[in-house]
Length: 68
Image (cartoon, rainbow, N blue to C red; front, side, top):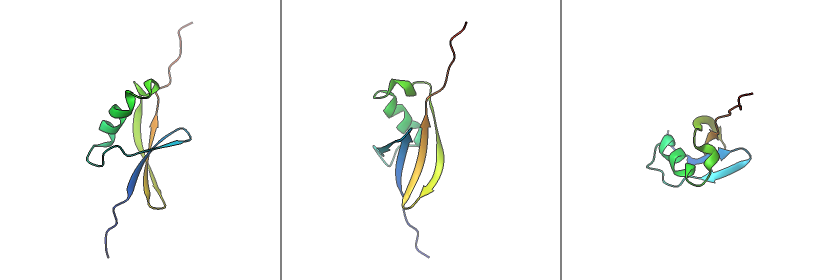
């Protein structure tokens, strides 16, 4: 049985972002996208699963509530 390397995709809401560098860990990719999307500043990344020939990671911004 041959192994297949899946392309990684990082999903933020309804937007799929391409993998900037396959050598980076998912947390390093999150750090990369923080400079582009400030809402990810305190965000997290988690593996969502396989969709077709893609390994999908979900990036979520940390929800916060204002005091008051």
